[in-house]
Amino acid sequence: MDLWRITIFTVLTAAAATALMAGPGVLLAWVLARRRFRGRLLLETVVSLPLVMPPVATGLILLLLFSPRGPIGSALASVGIDVVFTWRAVVLAMTVMGLPLFVRSVRAGFEQVDRRYEAVASTLGAPPFRVFLTITLPLAFPAILAGAVLGFARALGEFGATIMIAGSIPGATRTLSVAIYTFTDTGRDREAALLLGISAAIAFGALWMSNYMSARAGLRT
Amino acid sequence: MIHLEFRLEQGGFVLDVDERLTGRITALFGPSGAGKTTVLDAIAGLRKPSAGQILIGSRVVHSHVLRISLPPHMRHVGYVTQDVALFPHMDVRRNIEYGRRRGQKLELATVAEMLEIGDLVDRGVSMLSGGERQRVALARALMSAPELLLLDEPLAAVDVELRRRILPYLERVRDSLGVPILYVTHDRDELQRLADQVIVLDRGAVVRSGAPGDALGS
Image (cartoon, rainbow over all chains, first blue to last red; front, side, top):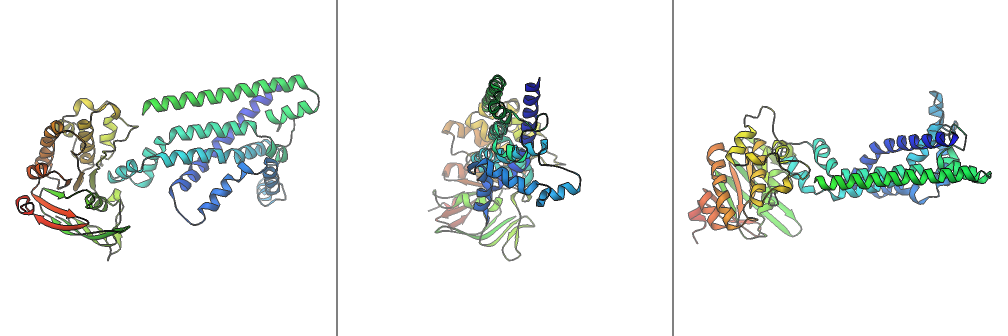
């Protein structure tokens, strides 16, 4: 029963993280793909940083920022929101670690959208935001979908940052990856093997769905 | 009346235009590389002149002195680009109605009938032939109720047979809607049949302009 609880918790937190990535991720991807400004390279580097930094180090940074004495954590604590070692920390770690992959995929998608369509739409009277919603976004949709699956898969597998900021509290913050490590470490090999099977099945399902949906999106256009 | 008086520089290329469009259809004529498309882009607001002004009717859409440069969506200029650029993720109907303005009198059915594309409206754009794409793009531009229609070599990509079939549609648009048209071409026959004013452009400069007979006389 415990295993199902861990599985459902992991899928739900990963889904929440993916949802949280979407807004800022699409915005960042668009800015990086379409705007030229000072500091663009810096922004690009900062966004990609979690991809190359050791996840444990990213986790430590998050811990310092969000602990009750940290700059963000203390502000949140004053309005009664605890982050560290709660499910919120799990979602936070997953979001930060998945965002770079999401942004990369969506950015490539935006870069592939032919600017002529946007130009024609604007001559037809569509203001920039409408052009974005009705032309750019739908044409980049397969890439957004692919990015969401990548981000979700990265969130599912998140370990290093999660263990730093959320720990491995049974029934509170224990995710699939963290549980596999904890179970193996404490000699509960059978449970670890079962969780391994579940992780593989979820990853397979997510990728299959993404391929199916992008194939359908490809047929539509 | 349309008044174009601007200079646009990009790379080593300089485009200089000072012309008034008085005809129903003005042809912009010249070899490739003369800057014809650049003129249309500047009028549509897709490229910014470095000096001068562009007036459409009584509206200043670009003025270097007044520091006005309306964005494309506020210019009310219909633009059929050379590659047509129908939106691939929309069917024909949604393409045509994309730019429809509120309070627009022109009905989809009227335009569709005029251009004989009524039975295409529920198709996907990838199912259209070259000539059909041209007419759908024209319909889409017309539905945005433009005060000026820019056509960039609308017949360049189609064969002679198709060309003969599409020309009458352009004449219909000219005669029944009364929208002034600036028409880029490098085909003398097309120009003589459609245009009542010609601007001959070469290497970024206007070399001649006037009635088709006079401008192309030499």
